[in-house]
Image (cartoon, rainbow, N blue to C red; front, side):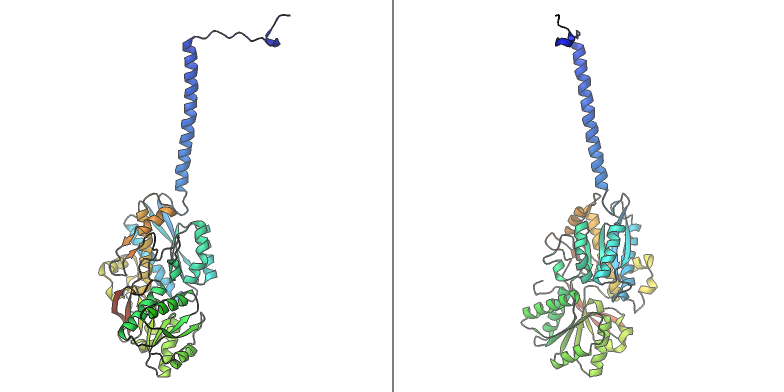
Length: 424
């Protein structure tokens, strides 16, 4: 039988000249090249799109969370804190924003307690999709939401922070303010530098805020070859301070450190008068506000407080002009207004925005961290200058000591900005 195509024979190949074969290969190579170019372009487009998909960041805007207390134990601080953040943000946006983007500040009530702070943080991060938290009031609440921030790569700046936020520290936490540990150290060193034999007691709130102050005081006293002779804690929300004051009297202290809030300070000052006891008192930054004067009147005379933020009378005029333009100057200029809160929040906003500026146009959580860690911000006397490094996420350890002048209803600086000598 003859061999045909269906019997395993090979069909004859049509004749092709060299030019035709060359053209076929050229067309095939062109098609392959086109596919490769298209794939690369798609990858680059995808990378570009991915690069822009940073939560809270668009071509024209950066969304920042700002968590203060309007309804909880620290509710007196909410309005001035919010005002400080909002004024500074308006000022920056009016200059054109940062790297082509305006700052959108989302102020949220955190109620200062851990559970309410968690609710507020979840709303801001998961629903409002903020880029970072420029301010969160309360050390206990900040501790509670830290895992949420880590999980979602959210840089957080806690206010009222404690030492563990910088020692050992955390990648996502930056503290542009003295911690309670640092301020308590300044208080003890101030007292013992005046009188090395002083007998110091401490009344403190039994939570992260108060315990951090207690530990800073103990450490500074030990460094100064002294000790805290009596410690009297109280539970948050307690107003009657007579049991704690009785313990101080029994220990015969001549100085009392007060790591408490304004309601407790008011109670202590009234109890001191009732006891007829001329003991000296020095408190923390949360009490260094003109709000104290209408609370206790002349009983405030001579009360000392440690704070990193200068009194209103010491604020440079250029900053007061910014408040005139972007805020309610008459309200802030009122003798009873807590300007220390306003400028404290102002400083937080300034630090976060400086970090965003240093990060450049390619803004991500990682570039923000690098931007903050390379920051050295001149605060113009509002507070100590703020700087961070990769190994230190606390902006400064310094504070000043203020004295209450009840008749003039103002605070005066009796010890300029000083950094603790004891290890921080």
